[in-house]
Length: 283
Image (cartoon, rainbow, N blue to C red; front, side, top):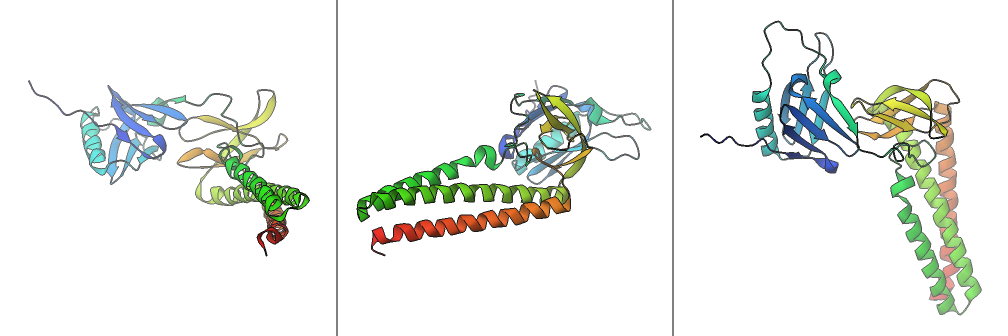
């Protein structure tokens, strides 16, 4: 009895996983699971620490390619060789089908999370809106601790309270400025280096949102005030959860100007907090 080596499971960056299951490949990402039948695969390429799954496509059309990155180079080579050997043979001259149409995509995100973008349309991942609030809370804690220290060392609790309030205000203003700066960067970067698609305004969960479908077949939602007008949405090709509703150049310039003003005000408030607290330390 011969014993064949199993096809390895590839573990990629950000929790991605690629494995072979019977007559199909299963590509699992953070937000979606793709089941790709062997009949939809033209070939699998191992490119060092990256594996590319090239789907079949009719003559004259660009094939869809799914990738997994940051995998073991050795495992990638074994995986590609084993899967290519298991692909069904095609008769000479047989017209290739559109493999993308055979891929089954299942969303792994609860409906309540699919539209979260912090309320400002910057991106559906949320960015600072969801994962970036802890620096602001940490700054609040530092401002509170500084106020207590100023009150204890200087013996002037009114100065300590003023330090706390001014420091907390500086933290909030700076946080808003950094958040808008991240929004401006995405609105400049994604249209140039991402993928732009047409969006569709839909009514969902009691609110009007914009829906778009990425190349992985998953429909996502992002808020934006387009008031019924056609909308274009740009998203990151390797992480469609990062997306922005495209705006005009004038709007982007306005956001940048306001952001710089807000960051300037935040800097002045931080400087004022420093001057207010300095006497308590003998300065």
